[in-house]
Length: 98
Image 1 (cartoon, one colour):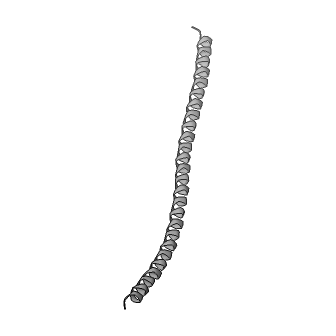
Image 2 (image 1 turned 180 degrees about the vertical axis):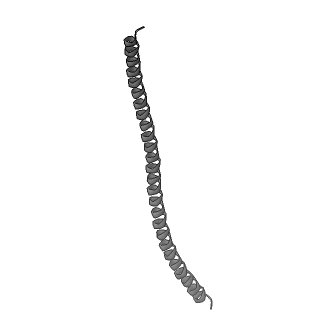
Image 3 (image 1 turned 135 degrees about the vertical axis):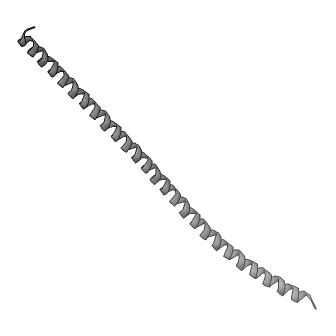
């Protein structure tokens, strides 16, 4: 083989390997970038799910607090009625006994 042929072959091999290497690194970088983006999205989904759960739990806590306050008010009313009825019963018992 002549020197010119060897030079041409080396140039062709170098250009093909350079382009192939460039495409390999480019594809590898794009794949890695997609993987990182997917992981970030999954992390965001998890975070968003936690936020939704917190909002639901806060709503339930508020409902329980409101329900508790209503029950306390109702219990106060029942106690007042009970005290009134006890007073009436004791008055009627005193009235019946001679």
